[in-house]
Every structure is written in structure tokens, then in C-alpha cells.
Amino acid sequence: MRRAALGLTLVLCAPALAAQSAGVDSAPRAAWKHAVVHYGKWVAAAGAVGLTALAIQQHSHSNDAWNALLAICQRNSQDCAIGPDGRYAYYPSEYDYQLALYYDHRARWRLVAGQVSLLAAVGLFVTEIRGRSHTPRNIPVHPLSVSVSPTPDGAAVALRLAF
Image 1 (cartoon, rainbow, N blue to C red):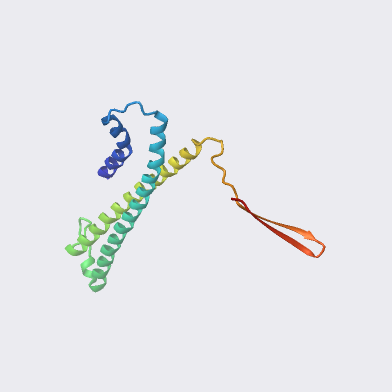
Image 2: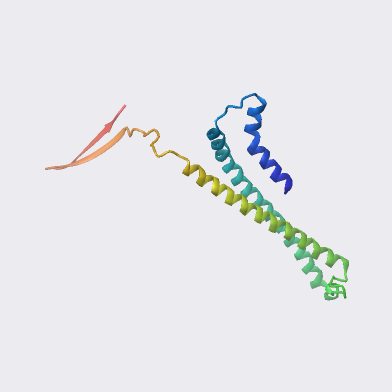
């Protein structure tokens, strides 16, 4: 988890580090902010998808360990007896139980990190939308125009194609 946070920080700070190493320190702050927001939203969205996929994988491992524990208990109910210390007396049962808990905790933290990453992506998307100017960009010309007008005999259809 710490490696992922460090990697995300390096990815987001790479343009500034490259500009400083090239001797360019006059880059406008607005352009730097725009680049971080523009590319950071996609990095955060990819992180959300990746962490959710990892959580699904960890949850699958947890289910496998839990099903193995249930199979042990169904074969012989004495293998699922709990000792005075609160653990399973039969070692493979305890192992499968601890393995299921381990993968379940990993899946939970990956889901939480994925949701935080998704919130960050949404925040960056909103930040980019709010930062846009209100003047229209290039308005495309619609070269095809079709009009219909009534005539005494029915209707006249006109097709205009502008070059």
C-alpha cells in the first residue's frame, strides 16, 4: 500500500521534476495545475479500477480458504472443535480459518483504498470541469442541412451540402 502511494506521488510529480532538471523553472503554475488535474484524474480512476480488481481477487482467495474449512468440518465435525484458547484444535482447520481472515482483511483494505481513489478521481474531474472557461471553443459547422416545405402537391425536400 505504501509503495502504491509512493508510486502515485512520483507519477503526479514527474512533470515538475523533469522541468526542474531541464532548468525550466518558469513554467506557469496554472499549466502545472492543469496537467496534474488532467492526468491525475485518469491515474486515480485507474487506481480505483485496479484496487477493486485486487480486492475481488483477495476476496476469492478468502472464499476458497473458507470453503476448505467448511469441507473439513463437513467431513468430520470433530476437526472443527474449538480448544480452550478459542482456536481450532485441528491445525488445518485453524490454518484455513486464519487464511480466510487474512485474505478478507486484505480485500477490505483494497476496497477502501479503491473507494478513496474513486473519490479522488471524481474530485479531480469536478475540478477540471469547474476550471474551464465559459467561452465556447470551436463550434463545428454543420455541412448537411435538410428542409421540408409543404407544396400544393405534397411536400418538397431540400438537401443542402456546404463545402
